[in-house]
Length: 391
Image (cartoon, helix red, strand yellow):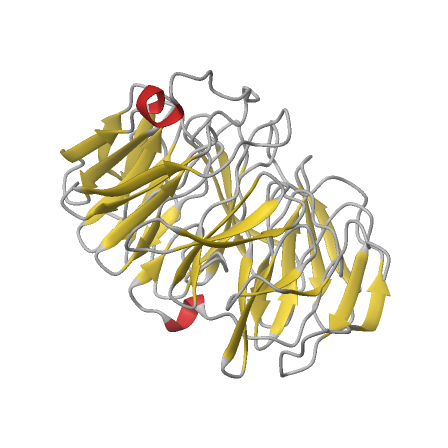
């Protein structure tokens, strides 16, 4: 099958990350949904701010919540553990690039991407990080380094942004045009498989008792041994897949397509096209959110594009009151959709088949997604970490 660039992909699969209560990372479980969240609807640099922590360097990584701690990154290779109660530092660890690389120069990066765009991944009592320089590492919750190694180098001049994921008792990193399976305890590379790497994060899949990974390069790779069971079912250069009820969705600038996969994982997997549709033509840096049969997508230029998940038909398009580029992905926090742009403008929307705006809020410039925990929202801007909640 030829590559189907820029598509919505629909696959009959299950996402195993949601079944792991002790696992969290980018956009929570990858869906961008926080069903128990009850955040404030209005905020600013001073309104409804519980605490605000200055940060010395930028990062695009989202905060990861683990119990009463937050994990954030900082360029070029620093992981910071922060108390969610008051924003104080608990510990900070900076990886030694010179020692790990043998004194080599770091790979190039884009100014918008930096070296710390991937979001930390929490699995049980450990936290795993990947940096755009090519370093991957593991720490326990008290800051002890378990392992650190260089796993590759970004293949694009815009740098690396794909976050690590967990499946089948392995850590997966997609970089350097290959998918790597790492032993969580030692960091040992268990296998590698060739697959074009872009900027989205890979998606764990479950076929009965078998597991696989869907990469943004469009390949489906068996987690057991790295065997590629399907190649180029779709190409996703910017976004990451999401899943709901055995269906995986991806949107990109050239349109929408639906595929069905078998419920079992064969050695050679064939996909069946279900439907094709045309979405608004623009780059989609932000990944989608699914809610009650609708897909919420936001273009680089700030158009909200709502699609019917069963047909791919456009329900409505609306230009949002944003400025800058929409790098952060939208999040569904409880009953409200929150869309953010790089300028720091954040729009609160009521989901549904018609556009209902609830509020417009302004913080600071950012490229990371907000993270939610109960009635608190954590936002990593260029210069601060905010804890926002109702008074």
